[in-house]
Image 1 (spheres, rainbow over the protein chains, first blue to last red):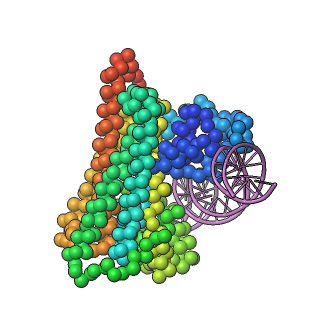
Image 2 (cartoon, helix red, strand yellow; image 1 turned 45 degrees about the vertical axis):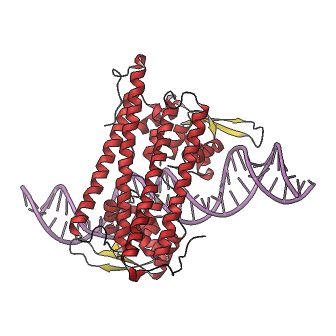
Image 3 (cartoon, rainbow over the protein chains, first blue to last red; image 1 turned 180 degrees about the vertical axis):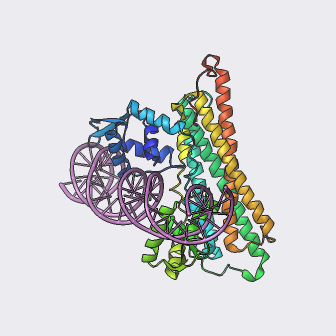
Length: 199
Length: 199
DNA sequence: ACGGAGTATATAACTATTTATATACTGTTC
DNA sequence: GAACAGTATATAAATAGTTATATACTCCGT
């Protein structure tokens, strides 16, 4: 789907499959993920199509690296993707689907789920804030004089932070609503039931 | 991936593939999508695995409907998915990836993209608010006395509304930052360039 | 009676993604 | 020097998802 386009976007600077995987984990983790077994064959197919060109480089600490760069056809494909307008109908949030079906669990397990969700997102938000503060410390022009690629990367980072804040707030609202229902129905006390919480 | 689990969750009441597709469009559109060519074979495979059972029913307005219900094994599989904890590493937001690479376009096309994004999300938010107000009008217990399945469905709807509000705000911040940069650099006026905006 | 819209299911061909596994080289720790 | 962690690429097998297309039935308008 869009993995090819995302790789085209990431190859502003030449990089190997391994490099691209690292970048996914550091910078795009909050909106996309890809594993190496998908990245390598995708890069291969993109080279066959003429979107990329590659060269082998010796590595100081391991086997030789195959470094890819974007061709002019690759840049055109990237621009086409972007000028086609925003792809807004393909969002996928498994965890939110799970929330929609939590009535299948008992109340303690529901609370476990929501607490785990909140904790995960707090961790993710803190990671993003950490990345931002390192960036801020290292770049004297931050954030008003970032160059264009960094400016848009910072936009996505800011959305990540805002998004996590929204979700954390919402987790608290959900937990509140569940707590109010439990206390409003004294016959349905669940504190002595086992929770079936995940390991 | 999770489509099977999502279908298990949706089959709280028996439904056909067509019904499930309608539900996707109405209620889960903001966090998942699936097309019929994926739903039908998936339902088939789930029946083979014993997670679902089906029966053919005559339809008053078309060919016979194959109506699926969840078996006890299906319910167990759903509970296992939920008790495995939240799946938070699989989020996919193509449009946000696109934003990260907008430096490949010229300024007017960047602004077009962000305006289109904002307009889309305003539309989505209004749709969700419309669904919520219909619900409110039809259900006297809304929102404090919803039954459990509806309560969690309402949680996901509330997150959708909050999420869209966050993104709309963020679009404005991005547009502001771009506007301030343009006015701060008088030599880089772009008002006479063509925008390459999408159709 | 023909065409179009809506209801309903399905397959083929292709593309994308995940999981598991194999290979090979370097540096560090026991 | 053997085991382990990290760097680096790759393939096979399975599952998932998209796009295009085919089928068939009902109701409505013309």
